[in-house]
Amino acid sequence: MDRLEMIRMKVDRMIQDLASKSERKFAYIHLYGTSQFATMLAVRHHVDAVVAAVAAMLHDIASYAYNVGEAEHAKKSAEIAQKLLSESDMFSKEEIKLITHAILVHSDKQTKDDNIYAEILKDADVMSHYFYNPKIEITDKERVRLYYILEMLELKESEVSTN
Image 1 (cartoon, one colour):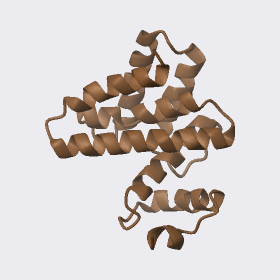
Image 2: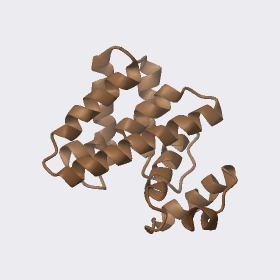
Image 3: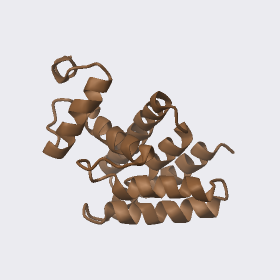
Image 4: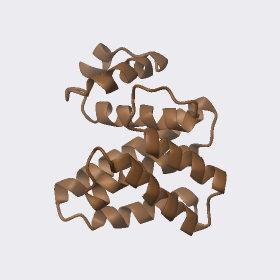
């Protein structure tokens, strides 16, 4: 079985257990959207797209599957990812380290990390929030990162938000 699809199946099972239909909807939209943006950014940066996509699929899993609050969700999501990836026997120790580190630091949008996968995840997370609906206000921390993302994509926020 494909590694990314295996992770998606496990995440799908966790999301399906959510009691609220709207929680399930937003979990699917955000995790899959972030994963797709991470894949695109990984291709652009010439790094492993599967590693980036898996990190994105798991980055907020604690928030959705275990209702962990904002302050602890990155740490708990990294722990869940560590366990899930190790048990799968489909990821190397180095890949697991890259994925869990990216998840652990993804909430700190203002700090530039020396790990490309962490930066990809931060950018993909912001893109997922913003492109879900450009009319919904994003945080100030995300806005700074969004400016550089749109610049990299050769877009202007006004072009995106008026369409």
